[in-house]
Length: 156
Image 1 (cartoon, rainbow, N blue to C red):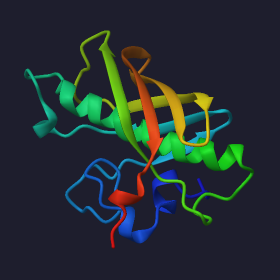
Image 2 (tube, helix red, strand yellow; image 1 turned 180 degrees about the horizontal axis):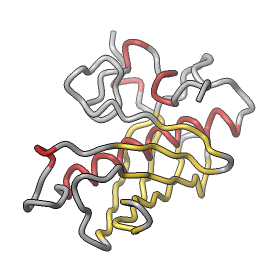
Image 3 (cartoon, rainbow, N blue to C red; image 1 turned 180 degrees about the vertical axis):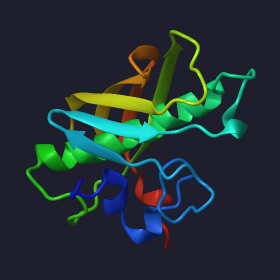
Image 4 (tube, rainbow, N blue to C red; image 1 turned 90 degrees about the vertical axis):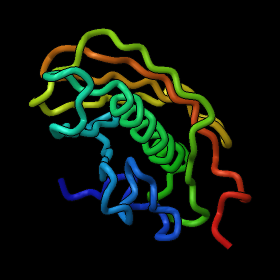
């Protein structure tokens, strides 16, 4: 892929998220891209991301859905405005609500694929529905209500 991930377009001072921040070397480094009308991210869990031997920890799944959701919200908001990601003013989103339904045990040793759809786009809020797959198995479904980052969260 030649296009930048949504998260790579965040301003330097807003790129510290544990899940997707390019400045957080200990984080997941999740990267989300457009594949047609859907957003897609991929992640390979490590042995320490375990819940029960052989299965992925549900908290990891929730945080991947969360970060893919806020990243997708940013990408969708820029797309809706006909703007290049990262252009000013910055469209950075944070989680207003996160809902995750676990549908099947998620096995270790497989790349996870997250597929997102922005189902509602408003100036200050984007709703994203996400499915998480291990291979062809749908393991979790999530819904993120992402809100424009309040000015009070911006670094001084």
